[in-house]
Image (cartoon, rainbow, N blue to C red; front, side, top):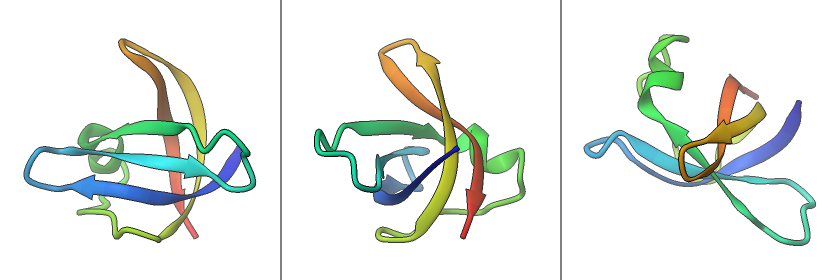
Length: 69
C-alpha cells in the first residue's frame, strides 16, 4: 500500500486525484467515486491522508483499496 494525500476531489463530478507521499515525480493517481462508495466514504477532503493500492486504469494509474488515515 502507498501512503499519500488527496490532491483534489470534486464530489459533483465524482472523481479526484491522490499523490503518493515522498514520490519525487508527484504523479497524480486517479480516484473514482465508486472506490469511495464501496467503503461508505461520502467524500474526500483536499490534504486528507490516505492509504491506497494502485492499479492500471483506462487512462493511467488508478487508486483502489482506499483507506482513510
